[in-house]
Image 1 (cartoon, one colour):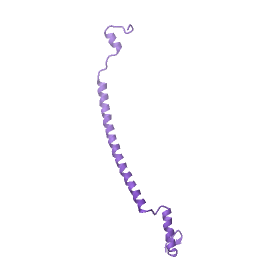
Image 2: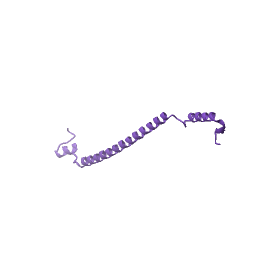
Image 3: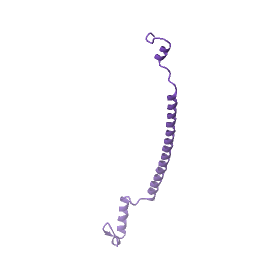
Image 4: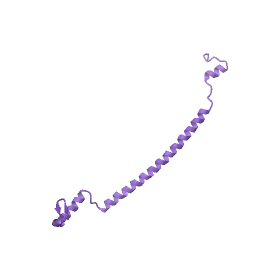
Length: 101
């Protein structure tokens, strides 16, 4: 017959079976159905939460790219505008000496 942990199951009978079940419970290989169901529910919840987070980050990336494009356009418009003359240029054009003011 088959041996488990060096003990022949057929010779041990009910005692060997009980020891086997206890060992499986203590090592975590045998759990109640309610624990298994709770673990599966948690797994499903976190899997769906991760999926929603991935979608939110993708939408955020797309929005950031659009905002960067708007910023580049605004920068180009503002750099293309003529600059106002400096104070020295204004006073020199009107024949004033900036040191007397």
